[in-house]
Each structure stands twice: as C-alpha cells, then as structure tokens.
Length: 245
Image (cartoon, rainbow, N blue to C red):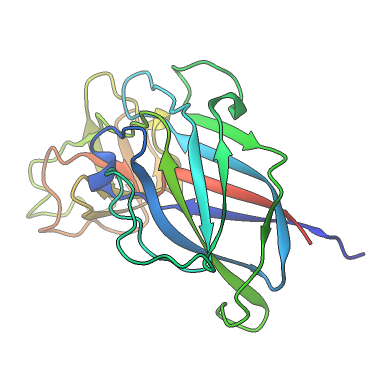
C-alpha cells in the first residue's frame, strides 16, 4: 500500500576551518547544501537534528537554537562561522521559507557528558514547491538547505594527532591521538569522515581500538598531515526531514 509519508536524511558538512573556533549567534552554521526528494510538491512537517558535541573532555553538548533556510537555488550566504549574508541577488521565487529549531526542542537538558544532542521541531508545515527542471533524473526534485546559528555552537576539539612521523611516513590505517582528558569514543563514531583543522583529509573510521587509537578504511597519505594537527568530524550535524505528499 502506498503511503504519503517519507523521510530524507542528510549529513551536513562543516569545514574543519569553520569548526576550529566557536560560532556566534547570527553566524552561518553551514551554507546551502543540496538534497533531492521524490518529484512533486510536498509538505515538510518536522525536522530532526542530531548534533555532535564540543570536542572537549566533557563533552559539552551543543544545545542551541538555529534556523534552517530552504531554497530552490544554492545562492551562497557566505562563509561558515562568519555573519550570514547574501553575496549575490537571491530571487524571491527561489526562497521557499525557513524553520526554527528551538533550544526547547532538544531531548533532555544536560549540557555535559552528551556525545550527541538530538532535537525534533514539530508542526512546521512548510510547503516545498519544486522547480520542474531540477533534479538529477526524472523522478526527483532538487532543493537546498542552509543553517544559521542562534547560539554559541562550538565544535572545537582537543583531539590531536600523536605521530611525529606522520608527514613523511604513513602509519598505515592506524591513527593515534592525544589531548588533555580525551577519549576517542566520546567524540568519534565508526563511519565518520575525519579532517584536520585546515580541511586536510584524514580518512573514514573503520573501527575504534581504544581511548586514543582508531583504524581507518584506507592508509593515511603522507605530506598532508602533521603531528598535533586537530582532528574533526567532517559532518557534525545530521538532519532528517519528515514529509507528507
């Protein structure tokens, strides 16, 4: 039996550069990123957000309000972790609306020891009416979503590469880290894509060995990373959109 309900989940990329310092209210949390859903107008009824905590010894949860802006065009709002602004004309016909995720939408209130903060914003009822020429094939429509912080999001980390030879000699798939009171399992999950503070690619996590060590799916490249580079999760936010047709 056909149903009028469906969901779309997307991992939101935020550069290591942007994560390396705390955000302020009004900063661009992430610029427009593309997603596709089954073709035809639909109603976005709710959004669930899963947000990684700060990379400190707590860790400290990012329980802050933020806005999601939806559009038919990916016109840039600027650079993440800077004040959001339009860099070129943004046509009214491209703008679809926004949804606010409030601090009170988060599950629980503990601001420490949470590796993930989860929120669901209900009852938003935003209509997405597609551009019929969008989409990568005949069965889907393309949209864009951007996020603007309404609080002091902070993904900065104490996780650092502990390998003096990593720039010249690959340790294979093994990545060893250190940091004051750091525990890898509190900050990193299997399947995470990791980058350094300058966005240098580290790799994808295959397994976590212990409190300081993990294994990657491929050997670490040389001449890219250095000892004491900071380690960030490339996609610290996951959004799930709940639709009806």
